[in-house]
Structure formats: C-alpha cells, structure tokens
Image (cartoon, rainbow, N blue to C red):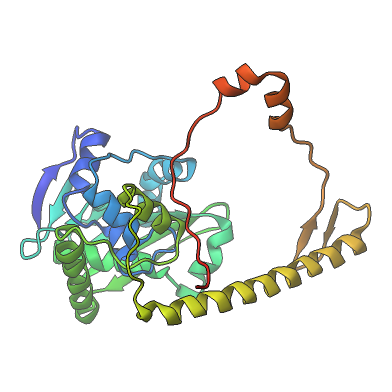
Length: 309
C-alpha cells in the first residue's frame, strides 16, 4: 500500500480535494454502471470541476457516526481486531486508483467496509446477497491495497447486523482496473463526457457543459433516425402506460370513496386531504405589479424539442 496523504487532522474540504485526484472505492461502482444512486457522468463532473461538493444529508451523517459502532459489532461477532488506516492510499501501478478505507483487519491480509442500511433495503442483503456496487467497491480496495480479501459489515436499522467476506477475484479486478483506467485516461484526462445514461444527473451535467449556443444550424446525421423513431415509439408507449396507471388509481379511488387509507398484507394505499398554499401570480401581477417585478428572476436554460421535418 502506498500512502498518498494522512487523514489525521485533514479537513473535510481538503479530503474532498484529494478525492478529485483519482478514482475512489465509492466511484468504482458508478463508473461500472452498477450504482443505483450515482452515475459515471456524475463522477466525471466531480473529477473535472473545480467545485468542492460538500453536500451532506442525514443518511450520510448517520453512516459516518455509526461506522465505529459497525466496526465494534464486527469485532464482537468475529473475534477479529480492526484499526483505522488514517490515510488515503493509492495503487503504485495505477496511481489514479485511490482508497480511503474504513478499517484494516489486524494480523490479516484484509480490510473492512462498514455500511448502514434502511429496513426498506433489507431485501438487498437477504440470503447472503451484497449489492453489486458494494462488491465492486471492495474489489477496488483489494486492488489498491493489494489484499487477498475484504470484509463488509452492514447494520440494517432496527432489524439485524450481518457481515460477509469477499475473496479476491483476479478476473474481476483485472476488468475493474481496465474500466477505471479507460475512464480516467479517456474521459477525465481527455475531457470527454462519458456516454449518457438517461439520468437527471446526466441532463444537468450536459446542460452545464453546453451553455453557450450558436443560431447557425448543423446537419443532423441520418444515423440518428433510428433512435428518434424509437423515441417516438417510447412516447406512445409511455402515454398508454400513464393512462393505464391513472385508470388503476381511479378504480382505487372509487373503491375507497371517503376512506383515507386502505391496506392489506402487501399494500397500503393513502388518499388523504392536503392543504397547500400557493402564490397567485396573475393576481399579484395585476394588483401589485412593482412587487411582482421586484421578485422576478431570469432563468437561463436551453429548451429541447423534436419535430418531424
């Protein structure tokens, strides 16, 4: 293991800056297209922008606070000892591969990844299953730290604690290293956006990179014709599915009548009254035009439309 920097007394902002220097374990699953919450395009934007994204939420805070508890539970369940690494490591052969590991297992060629999960996600961990992006994260750490195994322990709030040992798989690691190497060299260093994936994040990233426009039209290659026809087919299918969805909802509303909830062993349906307050923009503009003008703001965006020729 090669130490990039000690994390003792390292500020959160500096830690985020060091993360921009390469691909970390939590990035690996996204780059492989296996993370349901983060996309490759989002990772690309993070690595290539100067902005330091210090976004935090309650789930992230609880995950950090409970990391030590999960590590203690792991030691109690296994009899093994673990220690903090207090460093960001890098792979000597591929220095863009970074690892900020939760724990290293004392006296064993292995590490430990500590996770917490909502009870609603318990099915992702049943029967020995491990979410795929977490498996990739552990193999990334094995590649960086050159270990033969990695443990992953999870606390499912209010339900159970469990752990698994993931053995090193050279084929997975070889494929992972190649995917990360291609992404880092061709996309990040080459400043080439990854292929889009249909996510809202991809929309936001693409919009941020192409704000400047030119009114001069360009030729649309015929190679897009098939994709555009497919788009039209999807619009028709979505309209039909949306209509069917609404019909099911309407049938439920007719059945419920004045009841606010209906439930059985599989579903719970809620149809409760909700009061909301909204500003009447038209009335405000008519009666208080100066106030209306004062609180207006201009939002710059690009409107995307497709029409048949």
